[in-house]
Amino acid sequence: MSRLRATPLLALLALAALGGCGEPAAVDVEGATLELVLDDYRITPQNVRVRPGDLPLRIVAHNEGRLTHNVKVQSLTETDSEGTAIAHGGTESGRPGETKTASVELKPGTYRLVCTLGNHDNLGQYGELIVEE
Ligand SMILES: [Cu+2]
Image 1 (cartoon, rainbow, N blue to C red):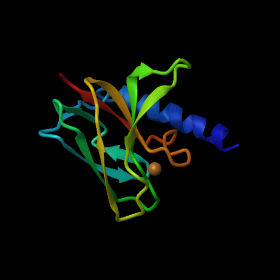
Image 2: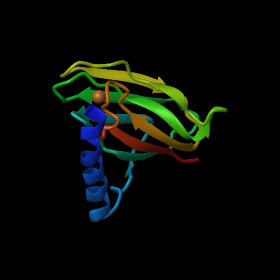
Image 3: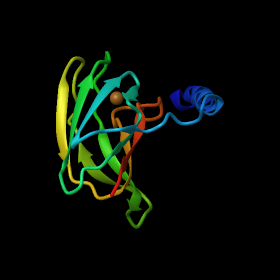
Image 4: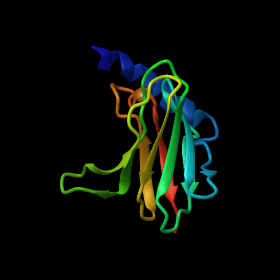
């Protein structure tokens, strides 16, 4: 039932994304700390690019929403034998007003940032992380 109701909204969001200037440009992050704001149901900035070299990337996620959120990192470059994106860690779930941090070891590649709680992913709480050489 809720899936059926969500579909028109997703279509609308997809159209809105296409109707503007396409995907928002990736934000270049200086250094090895990625600060994100989690909201209902967004990750801001949505598209980010980092150059962490050999350093682990530190994710600092501030939950400014009214619901609990997390942010997990999934590879879009590597998948397992069943085609599922490989998980690379992420933050624990944080309640409204909380800040959660996590350290992730990432090779150059493209990753998906996503809140894995409930259907937040379907509602638009995802983004993209590019790790450059
Ligand atoms: Cu969430």
